[in-house]
Image 1 (cartoon, helix red, strand yellow):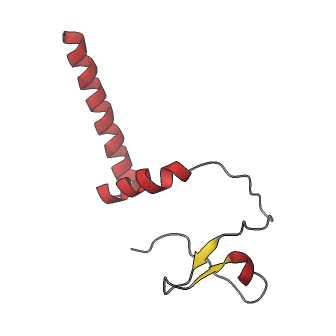
Image 2 (cartoon, one colour):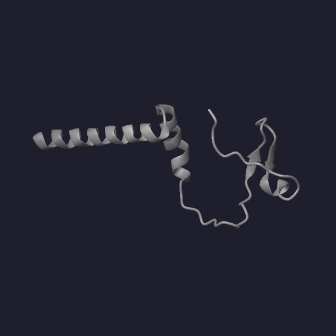
Image 3 (spheres, rainbow, N blue to C red):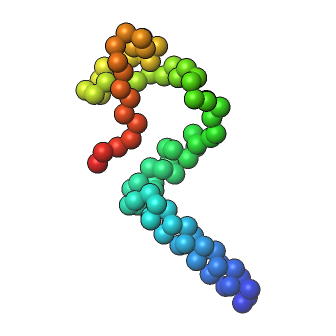
Length: 87
């Protein structure tokens, strides 16, 4: 019985340590949830190198409604991609 209490206590301490580490590096609990829910499943190592063409992707303009594919805009006018959040 004592071994199970020790194992469960160690597991709880490990979970708390991981949560606090994520809290420190990612931000608040909502950011951790978003990371675990949306970013982590798609997190993988890519094979793009400097100078490679960007993969075609569906993007949305600043209004959030107008969508376009990357290949439609490359080479016509300067294209600025903002990847990240400024909140």
